[in-house]
Image (cartoon, rainbow, N blue to C red; front, top):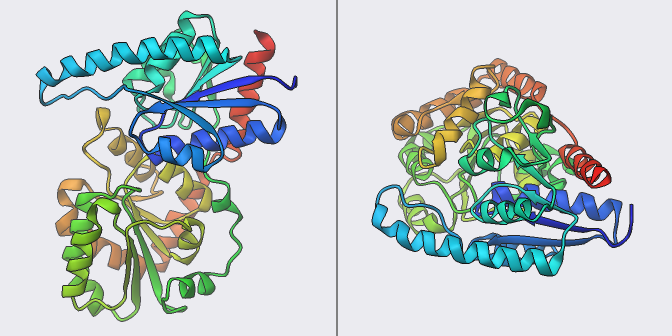
Length: 370
């Protein structure tokens, strides 16, 4: 591998896009410490904070998503898209990458489209079981499309698909802390059944409302305890609800920085059905109840959740049913040893390991063949 290779990685918007992108960059750097890596994200999105924190340079585009409810607002969106395409051209001219890698999110569309127009080879990483519109549009001129689910030929050219899985934060897989010690680190009882509730880094309104509704039942179950990540948007409201409830067996926080230890502490995970979350559950062999968000493109989280539920690898509770059903389902499940063991075994069978290595293998093959 030559020393002065340049890699452009574009995308973001959520942790589900950002953390896989950083994992890919880390694997490139592991192989070639002299490689130059530039991220391109969307201005004012979380990648503008998370990527520099991981040690990489990032440039922002003014791109934003289309408003499906108010079509008149999309005039502004189109103006931002034009500005983003113009800025993408300048970035490509100045950085001159050997390859552009798209991980999904607003910025990946204009960035990879411009790369393809300039003859820069592109690789797409599609994380979900139902492909997004941007990646479907980019697929025809992409050199390779790395996917995490079988059957993606219905979206992409079959000869370009590589089944790699989704990269996850490596520290999640390296945690060796004993379950009892992990629970103690959260101030919990070492021997009680533990449920981990996560709604993503920003939070999930319905999941939080469901846990609030379940607090009396959780308080009445002396053999259960809960670690509850609420997301920063719901910090104040959930704090107030917990303070007013009788539940003393719940540890609540807006964000969990040591997710590796949180997973170790848990017997059962309650989560949205984002692609990265599901990949983490698969690789860790974690039993889960998935509450897919209905507020995502093409309802892809429901399709992600069904890919597991149809294989008895997770339990799915629909968002509309969650407030009424989630509390009962999670308390019943965490006490059912046979069900927990079955879910764990089935979800572990779906794991695709070393995805970051396989994706970088594809990247290097594309560059070698250029």
